[in-house]
Length: 320
Image 1 (tube, helix red, strand yellow):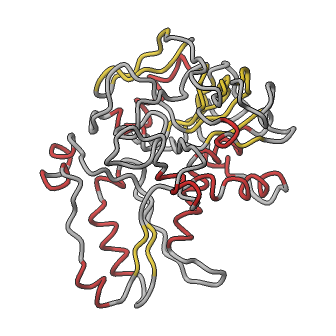
Image 2 (image 1 turned 45 degrees about the horizontal axis):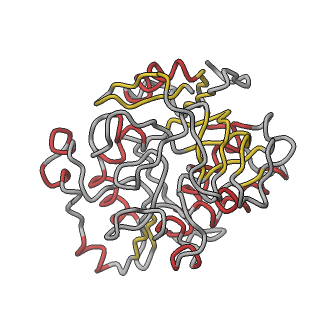
Image 3 (image 1 turned 135 degrees about the vertical axis):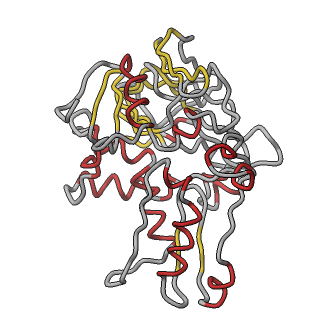
């Protein structure tokens, strides 16, 4: 199969890779039809993490099921599914609490929790910017889509990460109808670069006893951060105005989104026509064009808000 492979800082090549295969009776194999380039992918792309050369990128994926493990009972061959970026077992203590973002089973490092496709320090799993993807515990992780899945891929693909992640921020900030709400969006890479400014601006702006939800990607170690910021940020640390935060009695929520906690309800909003999150898509490409798409996205070129790759070579009418 063809795959977009990380070869080192700011170098992605599309090359032949071993076909994804089932390794466990609960696995499914999905033929990827659409996959986002996420701002989080740029952390790996820029060489700022421990992500290994030779791994396939891509953790926001959807497609059509083409193979089932012997223990799969719910998902069927031919169905379209969207896949949470979290890889979870569904039965550990954390998953039973709804915290699939901190699954204890799929993270091979005992001192850590949480696993994901194509992400540093979150397991050995290959990403979905490829023609095929192995999905562990397919009955649990795959969210089945309706009859309009193929025609509305731009909307449904957002259920893999950014739509539930954005919703997660509103939950952590305890946003209710009628609330005055401040949203600081510093951009996918700029969010890391300007984290101090953004968080302290939120502390300054949010009322006394207010809530702050932080969903940006921040890692315990950011090896490439020293050049972009400072040695402190390279250790995953930033100075914050904790005195003012304490004085104002604010609460701050952080962490990855447990996608499965939200994606079914958000899928139903899409199905009912109440929301169309695909409006963020600015460009769509074939998989072969992944290196170009990464270059433009990393450069933060004007108008490049969300890029979708189609390993099957098809777009659906957005700007290309």
